[in-house]
Length: 92
Image 1 (cartoon, rainbow, N blue to C red):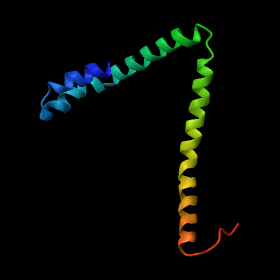
Image 2 (image 1 turned 135 degrees about the vertical axis):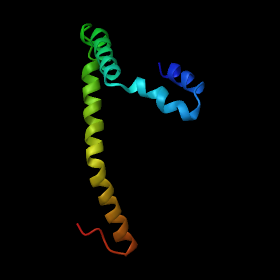
Image 3 (image 1 turned 45 degrees about the horizontal axis):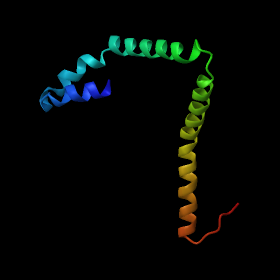
């Protein structure tokens, strides 16, 4: 599907790109795409009794928690680098 979109985009002039993309980003198209994805997901994993949805949830929670903690960790790292630059110890 992505390749079809990219191939169709190659034939469009740059000034016409917004008009070409606008119909693809409508609320109805997005809703239908989500519904189709969920139906395919249920058919592929839920109805078959697969354990994959559990893996997807665990990976999703791990990624989410990493993204939530990332700003704090970056601030902590910047603080440590600043202390090292001024020759101070860690202080803990």
